[in-house]
Image (cartoon, rainbow, N blue to C red; front, side):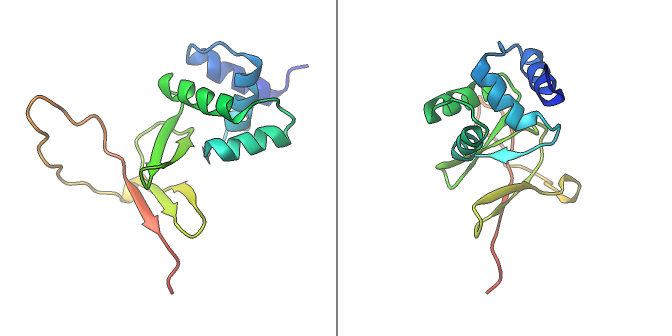
Length: 139
């Protein structure tokens, strides 16, 4: 019997033109099965998959997350040039990075104002602007 979360995950994949393989379905269900947006790292999704009994390798998780990004259903946010988070909310919006916790969360987009960007070099255009606001507890 198919659960609601499996149905949501299947529709999410097929809507993006992705074949719903067993491993993709397992990861998609963890990402969007409850209908809520989330931010994950490959490692945190791998651990969640293992806890749920899914037989996936860390390499498969990485490859699947990259495929989801290429299909446009996930957004990759890089922090510190090396740590990647994957967001199920693909609309343009800023993020808070909680340094003390190593956690990413959405920041209120309606409070962000960017008045002007520098002119890009000749022959190129601005593709997007990523805003990550780093937070740390006051000492």
